[in-house]
Every structure is written in structure tokens, then in C-alpha cells.
View: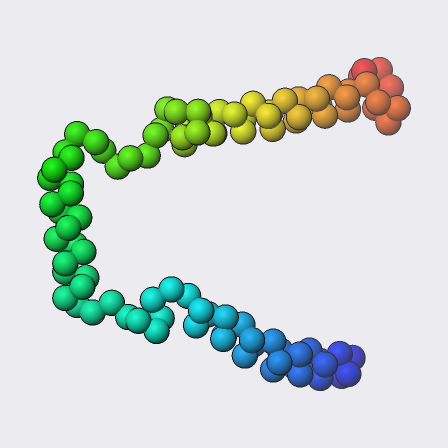
Length: 100
């Protein structure tokens, strides 16, 4: 038991620095955005939003490759699989006598 705990502690001492160094590989870590750059980007977003007012957020909710389209396709697939399992469970060899 104590060997397992000691091994876990030693492994965590080796693995945690590797994970922490991977976190530094995220974009923007070495070249942080200055306040002036952030204000310039925010101003460009406002200008772009005013230029294209009727466009919305750009998320195609009702398209097949959009949010609702993908949700409906997923519901159809997983619902079909679940209903097939339900139908098969009613007629299997483990079903209770007199129920199937």
C-alpha cells in the first residue's frame, strides 16, 4: 500500500511539470496582446458589426451542418439505436415469461 502511494507521488512529481510546460504552448503566451492591440481589435469588431447589421452571429441554426440540423440528425441516429435495443430486449431469451 505504501509503495503504491510513494510510486503515485513520484509519478505525479514527474508528470505535473510536463503538463505545466504543455500549458505554456498555448497561443498568445509569449506574445501577450497589449491594451492598444485589444482596443484596436474591439474597434474593428464594432465597425464590422455596423457594416453587416443583418447578418446575425453567423451560426447556421437550421442548416444541416448547423446546430439544430446536427442535433436532429444525432437524435435520429441515437434514438434509432435505443429503440432497436428496446425492441430486442422485449424478445430476448432473458425476458421474463409472459411479457414478451
